[in-house]
Length: 147
Image: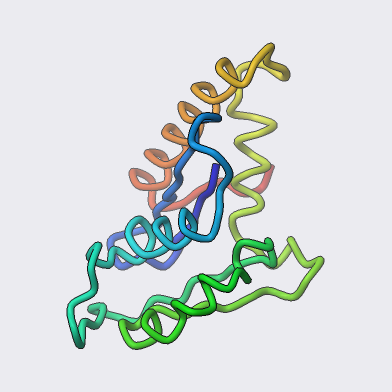
């Protein structure tokens, strides 16, 4: 699964996520770009010439290898032109990543069981927990990150 936390969205904070079935393969650079461009930045599938976002979109990334893949690097100029830029947090600094407390809450508070017998059991539980967390963030305009 992959997720993005937009605490400063003009419409209110939002959690965007995507889970992948085991038959969909690894989360690679192509999947990352699709998630970032369409789900996070809201860009059209094909960028028209001269397209620009309504307002700048800065996406904070950790240093997962996919974030630095050549395909992603090659796409940065077009994204920058569309108003989307990346900011990488320093390595080994998860405390600077605002989504980490959300992952922690989902893992330790929102999942009904501590262990699952199979990936097929785990994935729907994670998806349900993230859906609840996402709806909570949209309806209350905040998340309790104190846990």
